[in-house]
Length: 311
Picture (spheres, rainbow, N blue to C red):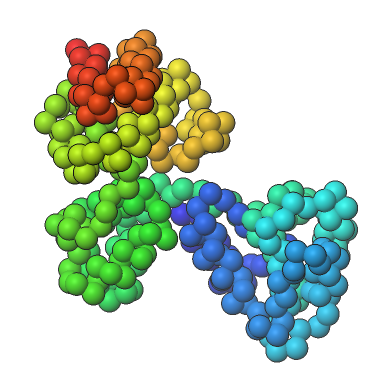
């Protein structure tokens, strides 16, 4: 896991004069950010305001630290100008031995920076981490419950941690406890739903729908997200040789739902998925225009998807 590589480097003192930390998964990026902050005291740390130039960071780390071994200057949430990049690259030709500059969530590459981009962690790596984190919190969790929690929350570690704080106060975290106290995300319900129809399971599909309040306020957004997900499934079939990370980036989605969509799509040919998608568009238009109810539209969508699957 990339975070542990980062943590190991700074723990053994393998530090760089300039770091860039960003990525889709803000949980890990924020952990790394806090780890770097911990290398310096508050008096020796400066987080630049939006109106402060990059030169202030360079000047700051060139001063001798007062209360700790290192000076730290943080530049957050901005797009670096060409002049900023040139100034930082010039500084790296002769950096201060006691200074660290951190670019956090910034656009613009600097030659010589040490880059850590934290994207979604694979499920297989995340589950053991959740088990360790639960133990650190003084609780215990079964392996299957950790997997269920990760899936219910779409691998959102910020939400996972918040849920663990609640669950550890109740007792040992089991599948039943997760099901009772953690609300599955809409996307998780869609994963479960599409898995069921891919297996040809009417009962599995309706079990997912039964977990929703049977009214248009719940079903309408679910139907729309389901249509988007089927379109994603079609993209994965048409771009079957494109790596997940590249395809996710080009489509503007995270790798996790794309990986789930790719697995579900294997049960269909591209032509079958296109047929289902066209039917979904038609049904969505029908219920939004009042020609049919959203529940009837969902019934027809289930039948279309199951009957279109590979025999």
